[in-house]
Length: 176
Ligand SMILES: Cc1cc2nc3c(=O)[nH]c(=O)nc-3n(C[C@H](O)[C@H](O)[C@H](O)COP(=O)(O)O)c2cc1C
Image (cartoon, rainbow, N blue to C red; front, side, top):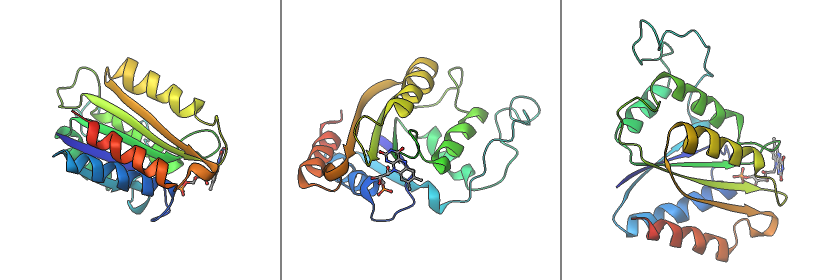
């Protein structure tokens, strides 16, 4: 299956990206196609709530920025992975902008191949995931009706550890 990872960390070799890389390695070994978008390397503005997409735009966002390539990828993706460092108890602001822009065309009534979701989260401290979990439950499971494939977290010394990266690799390899 095609898997799209939206990586919200700005650090190229950071803790989140290491987990993403291990996940990708595992998933590719199981025959999946994994696309990773480092959203902090993109020029993607926040939703401006103009409602163009829900009126004249008919599902097309008025902002012509790098979000256009993500809209296209979302149409051909079966599984979405939200990967992010925890910033002030939530996902990074850059990634939040991307998710807010789903408003234009990713909705329950919209035919798209998107069926599954997972999260990969990195933090300094333990038990920092309630904000991200609230979004997973409310936005992705309840609202979009996606299947929960799992939440993988690392905090403190777990970040970058061999055990954690192996866990992410096994997760990727286990996807069916
Ligand atoms: C702006 C900012 C806010 C942060 N807020 C939190 C926080 O609320 N709780 C926490 O445990 N760690 C927090 N951290 C630490 C990061 O979540 C942690 O270092 C993480 O491993 C970074 O992942 P990365 O290497 O992929 O960027 C914050 C870091 C930054 C830069």
